[in-house]
Length: 127
Image (tube, rainbow, N blue to C red; front, side, top):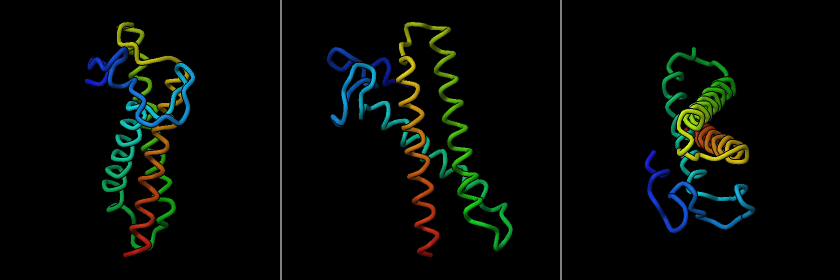
């Protein structure tokens, strides 16, 4: 939350480009905001899996569990984008970005979700 109000140079913390992969106005990779999205939804996915896993029957498909965790993580990410959209409509000065920002946020969310599920699959294979 604070990333949008902490000034850094001519931008705010969310707008800081950490790694210069691609820069073209709003279509910029890799920004602090995108790393926060990836990390946050990786954690959300791990928590979702942790809460749902005890409910699986012994011998149930792990793949189905991973797919469910992906769905929950992506759903929470989409919900977050709706909250950001409502914030922009209610308080235009929040300046959380436009169409490209939303798309990049969703891609960052998906990156975090898939990294989390990859971690879970790797962990389960090596038990």
